Length: 467
Image 1 (cartoon, rainbow, N blue to C red):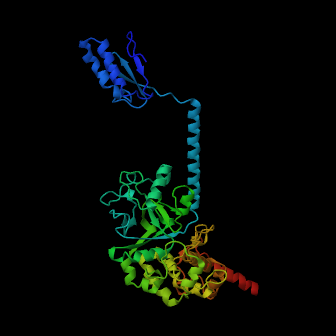
Image 2: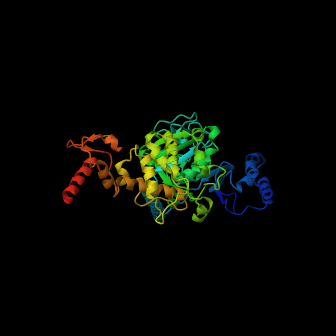
């Protein structure tokens, strides 16, 4: 390597191995021999900074080459070699393929939302969610990203996203995993939680809520069909299949967005205690034979909990407690209360007609919408996740039995017997039927699947046939 010549810059390749320590002394001696005494001071910085140059000069980055021209040190960056076009295309193809895969997973996730319970439950207190203000209130449940530091709900567009489809896939994944593991990122972090946790197992909610009675604990219920427009519910096993979480918490459902409005209702745990709920259903007390976290095997369910009959007295008392959740939720909450105890089901897994009648008579004054028997049924046609959750299974069967009782094969006969001696102008209140409603043709119909007019017409046809 030639350090000096006829005005030719000399390039030191910084990637070569560092010279021996004695080389600096040799260079210094060369300067003393070659340069006049007056110019040695100007050349001195070269020798003093040589140890730095053998790695890289200060202020330069790895991948630069030092150029020495006379006494000055000039650092010129080495331009990276551009990637070949073929490689760029390959990377683009891989990215597009990855995005397509993520979109397909999200599409499957959205399809899974059709097969979930209509009603879900939650226990919480002001300290839930890390103690942030404004998350858990009597008026609604608001995930972290939807409230400000003072606990006030943020205007739409200033808080969390409208949908998980508006969030990058990997951010949604980190957010869900962080939420399930109890992480609390900074408010400015994009993974600041936009989820709240719910369960289909009412026993787990009531058992957990009991310990929050003295700290302002709430028992909440949501109606998935009446939530705000952009609020969606996802089951954790389905999210795991979509790659959005790493553990199949099959007892847990994540709700994205605020839960408020007509599809939400909350009652304090203390109120339920005062009304005697935990005395009536001791299996959900903390000292119960089992903690209701996670699934239970059928053998354990049968050995720990003997069967109990549904009685009119119990239904009447539990209906009063369920009424605290308002008219819209009295029916589903009462059904959930009644299925917390292990019930005596037939070999076909169904309730006896006697118990179904007791339940149906108790809710006769409550409105059971016709659509419960249609495509918007309480029980989805493809079923819901009940494996390992016998209480949820019992709840589903009780709802099915109620729909069948009110709109099934036997309803016409029961209504015919009740109205066969009455005209259309009779007082329907005596029959325990809903309020009259004039139809388009001037006749009378009800909110039941089969109106009184239909029943009377059927009665007339039967009488004609008999005659």
